[in-house]
Image 1 (spheres, one colour):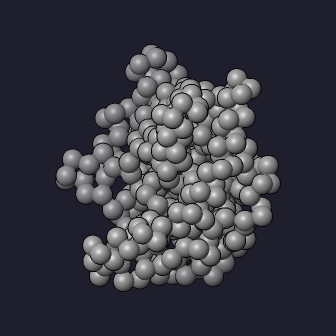
Image 2 (cartoon, helix red, strand yellow; image 1 turned 135 degrees about the vertical axis):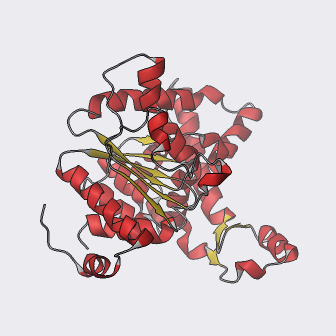
Length: 326
């Protein structure tokens, strides 16, 4: 599809001609072609992409139907909302490489949890969200209902209860965009997140049952059902930002259906791109080159495959800008 290119895309087309820059362009064009031909796209978010404010570009991708489903860590699920409600309280530490152990302890004492150069304010972010999630958990349990982690968060943001705290333009929150579109989210290993830890504390104290929040196995079943319904025609592509469980969990749904369920009509993922800084030679699953995934029954021989070995906080917004024609 020919489209008018904005200044960012024009700059990319003129200057990004070789090496990882060229891989960025190839991956962006491949993503665009996949959508133009009727395909759908899964985007997986690892690392601290929400704290990096990826929502500024990802939310618009969601609004324009460039993303059909998201897989993310529990941290990325919660941290987009934390940035939404507590942005002014975040503290940036440009000289983070120079911090001493005492400097780090002082941040802890002042209730700042550091992610590289950005400190998340515990009281304004974690605790502000906690009270509203706690109410949702307890309400569901009292009614004998169970939901996924992202469904509880959708309930909270849709209720309007958090609007009183908004500190950024809501259009820059990818969770709000996802909730408005009601797109599915898969959150493997949610227990690893701060809100997962908070939920576990209520279980330990006997205030909630562990079963009130649906499990990772149930997420795999949920993803299986979604993939069966959406993988016809051009199929579903896989755009992976970073590595880890956010990518490893959902990509396995295809070989699980083919090998373990013995369903032999399961299409492979029909596009694959990963933005990665992981080193393949260390035996890394996260940094494995795309061709390795052929041997695991995840990708086909002819699946368009791209890897951009660079910083996802730089690369992802540029690829999204290209797809959005900016």
